[in-house]
Length: 267
Image (cartoon, rainbow, N blue to C red; front, side):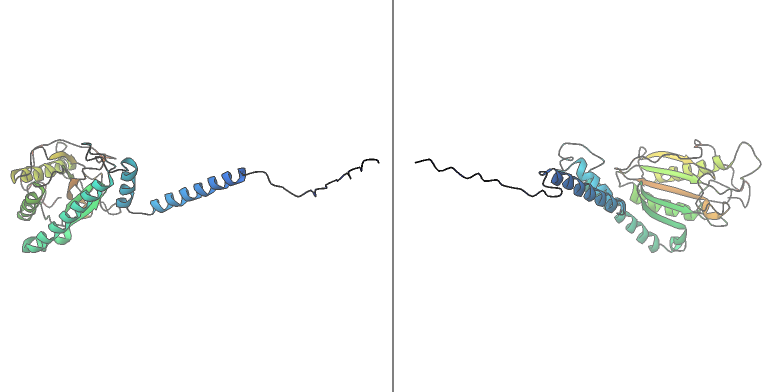
């Protein structure tokens, strides 16, 4: 008897469109999602305050928070930056309260500006039309100027932070004397403030820089002759911030102050 022949089975597959090409597309999609997340994080960070930015930068510089244990003062330590910012905020509030508690200084409170900047706590003494903190046309401090600086010295001398003192004038020329100009006046006023602060307890090495800018860093740029352009700035430097850079202008050294009453009615 002849063996039974097995039937031949033919399987036909329908062709599809596109087909399945493995998992490569999943990797590409994951990379795309990761890139989008990174973009959104960057955009979010750009809209945050300096305090948040410093804290995030501190985490990436020192994720475990061991900088202090290692004996380092890493600028990126988020905890340290936050603590320093909080200390400056408390100092600002304390100074404002003490100024308002003194009758003579309370009247001048609008001419005393205290702000927190990325560089540190900036205290500005703004001159009035006829002089406020300095005698007109001189680097000699007025009674109000001496009282305010004595108050500041009592607080600043207790801090570990370094200090920077700047002197500024308006755009009006000081005098026709070529040997004494706004450059000398701005530097002399800054140095007068330094001498009084150090006399009242600020450490000799605490003031690291004294600068005279003349009228090169105007506070009111659209009015170069505004009295508030004549000012003294005391910067309590942020220990974790980069030292301020001179962007323009010239710095002059300590020089002799003009005699009282020189260039009357000026500056």
